[in-house]
Amino acid sequence: CVQPVVASFATYADAPEWSRVSEAPISPFMTGSSSPLPCITAVGEHLFALMPQLERSHDGGPEQLQWLPAILEAIVETALQRVLQIKHLTPTGAQQLITDLEYLHKVTDALGQGAAAHADERPASEQAAAS
Image 1: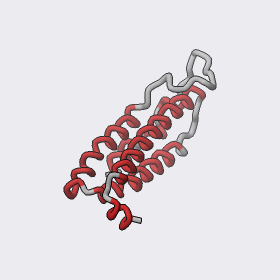
Image 2 (image 1 turned 120 degrees about the vertical axis):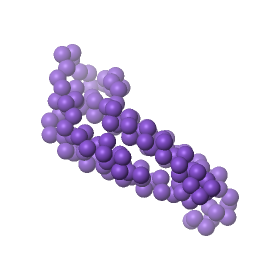
Image 3 (image 1 turned 60 degrees about the horizontal axis):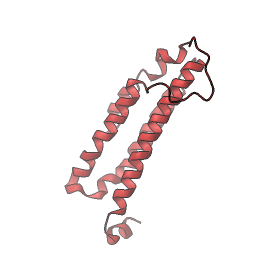
Image 4 (image 1 turned 90 degrees about the horizontal axis):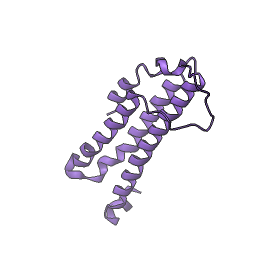
């Protein structure tokens, strides 16, 4: 499940966006003005595509969604490892990094909440057994 994400992040630390210099002054409050890098949106698309597969597995049993937190954690860990490998970061590159990390946060947060809501739909007997 995580291998396509790891592949998406393969060259993330070496992206030219990190050393890009903007001709316009950068405001410390200017976020969200750019789009996430394609490799980041590919991660989000992969995760959202994974959800129906997990829900359909074993007749849609909620036990398959128990793997989602581990998958999300592995993806966040992979992203963090790649971010820490960035060698040079300009203010413009930092804005791009903020955009990318905000996108990943929104995706993982939305999926994590969706899995929790799905788990809450289980019968009380299943919830008690899982505790």
